[in-house]
Length: 473
Image (cartoon, rainbow, N blue to C red; front, side, top):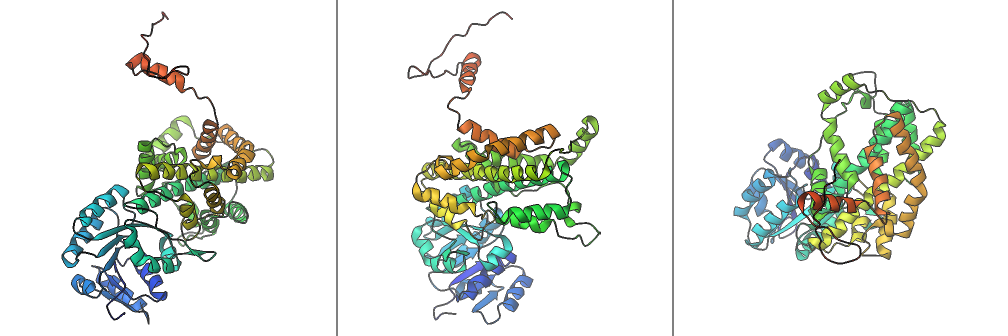
């Protein structure tokens, strides 16, 4: 403990909160913790060892131990629990103190809370944290937003605790207000898209190629050694080797085929709709998680219409290489969609995001970390206001060179009856975005025909309406 008190306090001593505190303490900071659960308080005190830490059962004692102006971080579930903690803290805080929300709060809630606390003279940071339990302990990616001066008060703590890539901490001030939680939301949307693409690749290999878990492990392990190297490919490699303690099977084969969600992917898709930014891979990932939960309907349709799928009859080695390249292209296109959403949101919400910085802090600690982020970072270093990653020569060419293999994989999956909506969405996004003409003129005409919504012309500015003449059928 310093002469004046502890550097930072943590409310919420679950695995994430405890691990992050232990991480920070190992970097030399004096830290206090608080939780309503006495067993979690005891667990932190037992784990603290020689570190300058203590955990309190009493909120008043916890606050009194902090150095003024106080910095209190919360790691509790998003929603009402965050508001409950804030309300419990307020009687003990004073002007100039700082509250930090390190959970997955929806960014509009962060805006409301920041506004309410500002009126009381209390600063508020919304900090997205990615990396899970292991990341919190060893070094997460951290995405802070709010008043810059408030971030500077805890900057040294965050930079010390964050993951490092080439000596650079995977944390940086992102922008005012809810910028941090917005960036984390889109991060999670991209995460949804990647997980769907990887699951589709698994589906094709398991069903159409008849590959067992050992062969799947070998393929993903090989892929992780090349351009697909990423955290999600790495853990997928491990998953296929995990035994089930209750049977003689692999664990992956006894897990139900239903994917749950906590809302961040859906929030990303909904906000992209509001911004009118196309993010089809994120949309489809949310949709497919929803569809997976209709087990009874899927079983009924299977019985009624059949669920037959074909087996691939061609050169399997060559096809796996096509699939690898297709997945890489689709991952670039998913990053492209998420970064395009951030580019638009930055202007619309006045976040003033530096997308090179976003790519930089995602390179380590977070769930979507991948070697590909180095190329994305380079794209924004060359063109800071790049609206779409396909306009970067290197990334655009990388997709163009792999489009033949992406088409081959999509075509094969369709012929065999294996659903690959993520791959199909990525290809359609690529084709639509590079098209200098789309059939939206017909949609304009239809809207004007049935609803007098007007249309625009190619040869004259303005809005026009036609009294359309019905023809005899």
